[in-house]
Each structure stands twice: as structure tokens, then as C-alpha cells.
Length: 365
Image (cartoon, rainbow, N blue to C red):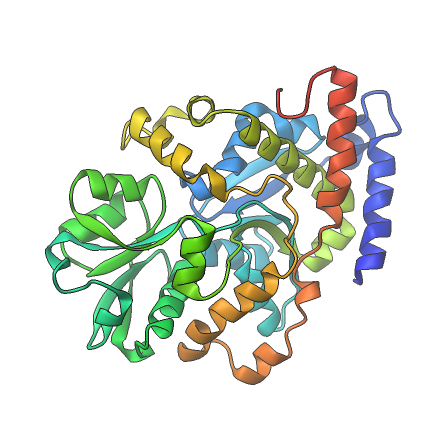
């Protein structure tokens, strides 16, 4: 569907949502089905907005009943979406490009992270041996969340930029959290890519050190050669086109959640989350990490100009080297079909309308 048609569909959804006294009842009536969103690791800070929206009651606020499904690897979550097991996925934007190359149409409807929030860690006993990704030449076992995951291909993109051959990087699936930590303890891998709070747990226990940091824009560009938007809400294009009211409700909830994040401290955000999300590292460490990387969130939830192309270029070397993409297929990618800003733009008026009627400021409640 072209963007102009998408705008018309979204405007229709807005009109439906704003015609009643509450601004939401029609949307609720139209959305009688449960919407499942599968997330590539719910307890990771890079995916924090999904659970926070649930904790704050924002999905129901905008008229949608959401069930969050936890899946350690974004690639597996995407596969479940393609198979029809869930309606939407919380994962990295690059999956929509990959799906198009594979002949399947999916698109991002909200971009939540401006940077990947990922860090490449290496075991502490290798600090004198591995000082940069270039030291992977000769062979290295790298830990990833899944073979089809963004961590796998970002890791390969980092290695490729450093001149490391694909045959020198041996991917080992170690997940995140406890299984990632165990892999470092047992020396199953030499290095591994993960996010907070697993990063803090590894550093606390002195099991590893930071080799490459992609929690911030400048460091991400240094590591990959491009800026790299990451966490998105995406779905199959056919489903989004046939369910504009439900898609809009989810995006509106996300817009309100991101405004709430922007207006609150890391401590306030952490206390709104389930306690088991920070139990492994402790509240203080969790808050310190969140405060440090809070800059990675994207309050406007729109795809920044040129950002999709940056992701394509950053991923290109790693995926071509791995044999997943070909140069010809990359050249044929239609980036404007991998995302839409229409729902994010519409969410501004919807969220503002709700808060105006509730007599509270956006981001405050």
C-alpha cells in the first residue's frame, strides 16, 4: 500500500476513535480480538516500553487488549509473526528489510530506539588478546541471541567492517540474561552481544569487558559506519492494512508511553516495571544503567529521515558475507515499504485529545 493510501486509512481510524465522548469506545467496539505482540526479550531495557505500556494501562487506554509474548530472540519472534501466531512484533527494524528480501511484506509502525542499545562484551581473561573486533581474525566464538537475530547480523557487520571474514566468526546461540552469563562463566564463547541489564551483570561479576558499545549514536556510527535505529513495532503489511484501528491503538499507546519515559526519571521508570526485571542486578544498578542509556529512546516514535537507509547499509556487509542477502536483492529493496510514519503522526492528535479530556499533561499520567 502506498503511503498516501495508508494516510487515508489511518485518518479513518482516527475519526472512528474520536467520534465518541471518551474518544475510545468505537475503537474498543471494533477491537474485540486480542492483539498479541511478541517481543524479543521483554526484560531487556531496549524493549522496556512494551511492558511499561502494559504496567501503565496505556494499551487499554487507547482501546486495545494486548497480550505480550516473551521470546529471547527477535528473529524467532519475527518468524512467529510471519506464521500468524502473533499480530505484531517488538524487535529490531532490520527484520522488515530482511523479510522484504525474502519476499514477505512487513513494515514498522513505530520506532522506539534511535540506537541498538547493544554492547559487544568479551571475556575478562581475553582482555590482552582481543582489543578490537579486528582481533577476531583467526577465529572467534561469538555469542548471539539466535542465528536469525539482529545480534547475529550486527556482530557480523562489526566484524566485516573490521576486515574479519565471515568464516572467522562462529556464532553460538546463548540467549540473554542467565544463559548469556553462564556462557561467559563456562567459556562457551569468547565474546557476545547483549543489552542491559545483562551488561551490568557481566561487568558486576567481572566476567567480561566492553569491546564495542552501541548504546549511543556516536559510538554506534563508529562501530557500524552508520546510525542504526533499532527497536520497532512491526507487523505484516496485510494485517496492518486490514486492522488500522488496532494498529493505531497500539501506536498511540506507545507514543504516550514514550512521552511518559521522557518526562520521568530512571528511578521512576524502574519502579513502574515488574520487580523481577531488575532483581538480578539490583535496583540501583538497573537505574544507573537506564539513566545512562535513556538517550537511546525515540520519543516521537517516527522513523528519522535517512535512518532506514543507514540500517540497510550497516547490515549489508554482514548479511551478504553470511549469505543471507545478495547485492542484487539489496539493490532492489524498496525502503519506503518497510516502514510508515502515518500511525505515529496520527498518534500525536489522539494522545493530545485524550490528555486534554482527562485534564492531564501528556507524559504525566
